[in-house]
Image 1 (cartoon, rainbow, N blue to C red):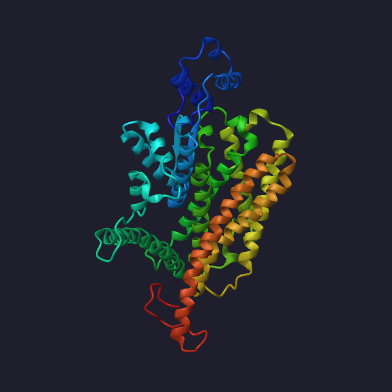
Image 2: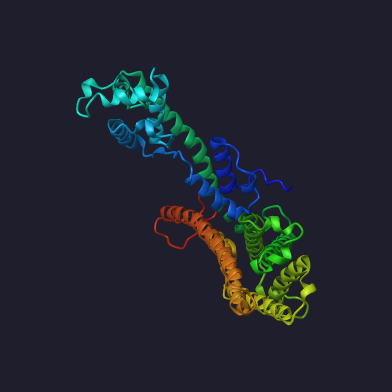
Length: 444
């Protein structure tokens, strides 16, 4: 018999059957022989046919206000002689405060729940002077965070000390995290401000950054093609099924895509800062435009081919598979052409270091937006051989990419605002003049 995973949710049928057997004894063999759907319906029928009906008093949450309201409900039930009719007590939050008080009183009263109900019934609602001692105690100490008020009360100073202690502990956690987040744009600005040689990485660093970025992009594209919902039957066997959850998309799909965007934009910054030109990026005898078109088509096709090999899609080879591959080539080529067109519009004589803060803020989101544009073209043309589940899955992947773009831009924008404020202060009205300041990052 297969065992359930440790963290698997417990089925409703199992919960109800175990509860029934704990309260009323074992279920007959005829019941356990039914299929799960019929067993649940039969169990409901058996519960409703019990000669003794069971009821529960449920007290909801809401702090001291819900506890006060619940006290009035308990007093009203006692006056109606209904308090002892309940079999269970279910509470949460503020209801748990008054529920634990009621449970403790019942436990300590010599006559149990009946005695508690009698004590609640013998006093009218308006006569608080004759209330039972537990109710008076409850009213007197309802301010449970600081039972005894006053400037010289130890309870008041204990509450203040607890507040200051917890506030300090929270600051010790949050302030370093916020500082680390705000330091990221400065670190990225420092990376793209100079050349790889200035950073001590050597002249081959742009090539390494480019190659690693392409590899990460290949990993992201492979994951996106492997885990299309319409290919679920091909992932039924092997290790692929366990990586379908959203957390694995974030790890194996979105994270490599972010790293690829960062490495590729960083490689371009180092290349431009070293005096490189777009026209020099050629492959063989192809011009730069053809190189970008071929590169985009090659990377997209490589990711698709790797996914096809992993899922062994050739076993069910059809004409639509060839059409899908051609669409992959076309959309990748269009994406490469779009990237080349954007880079071609940038002034060739200005290094990235002259606008490092802006580049560090918007380069990665801009690259991801071009990726989304290419993906949109692919989804639109490929809609003939994909289903709604694929498009919904791609839409959710695009949503996560947009979240990353917005978060990246927001973090970098805070750095730009601080930078421009310092620039305005230090130039004394000399607009456009670059000055040296003591901020990390050097020239502004």
